[in-house]
Figure 1 (cartoon, rainbow, N blue to C red):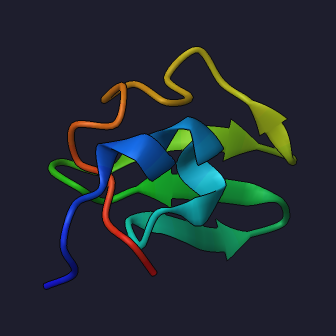
Figure 2: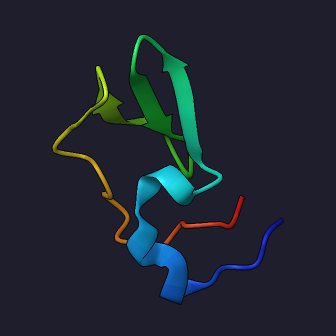
Length: 58
């Protein structure tokens, strides 16, 4: 498991190992229960939902 570095969390979801593409521009965060963070490449209301608490380096 990668070491958490909260100084890098400002890079948002796209730089986190938990950011998973699922097709057609949709991406989920699988840090806990799957959460849709991008839909058709557009941030949802759940984008960056964890505020960096689950961020892990790729």
